[in-house]
Image (tube, rainbow, N blue to C red):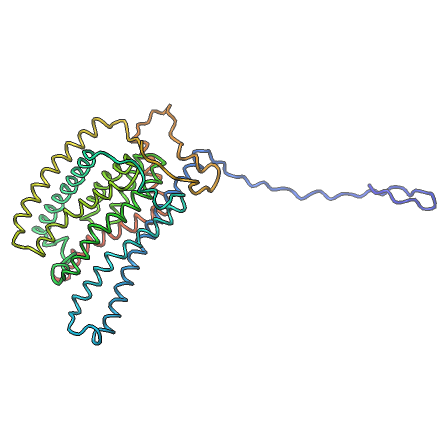
Length: 400
């Protein structure tokens, strides 16, 4: 209704306007998600970032090693006539290769681990802080790890021999032949440094120091199993993946109990060093090869017996689950996408359902492996394992 102003003291009649109806409002239904669904989605986001961290680790490692070897090859080809007269080109390239294997993994593991720790608020020195476990526990864990390593080693050895006798295919053919054919003392020394010192420190830093530290917030058992699985897949071949998974379970348990990676680094170094001794003796002192093989066999038998006893004891005494008593996290705000995100660390299946802990661990493992980044990682590694396993079959078929 509109009231016009007065004209000469007279008010014209009011004018009424017909208002247009407002446009209809269309309401788009929004899918409602329960708190459990929200937390499940956020949990899978965390796991997806773990998978992407490992993919970045793998990419940096492979790319860095190729870059170092290509640069070394180009530099040697350009300068060999002027600065390296009389130097054997094969030996020099082997040394460059070993240098790449010894140095590049430092950066390939450290850069993604540092980025992952920064995202979760973990400071670089946090994985080295924690409680010291007694020597008896560390010795028992080391013997168990060595026993599990030996078990898989003999299973793989006999399976490979059976396959070679029946099909003529050797799964280990061509894998490390170049080390035996033209390895130099300098190159072998760099190889030992890479396997026995560099690899244990950096692998423990990323797997037990960063990934286990973050995943254990969703359950110690879940963190141990999933990091051991990822640790096994990261090795990328059938000979080492099951062995690394079994050792990863022991290392994860020690890491959760101590809250740091100092003890896990020691166990990892001992395992790799003992595995490298026969190869070192074969290279430097072949006259003692039989004696070392006998001692190594005795060590394997004792460690396997101890591992069986330790697993039986653990199954009987620790059936109620694993508690991360000493796991001292220095996490500020782990990837705070929303206020509800931090609640997953305390979210458990209601006690009224009476679900055993192992079923809860399996539930979380299934959700973790179904996340996007994690699928990308384990599918890539499984393809790599399949390709490395099928390569000897393809080589035998082409030779035939």
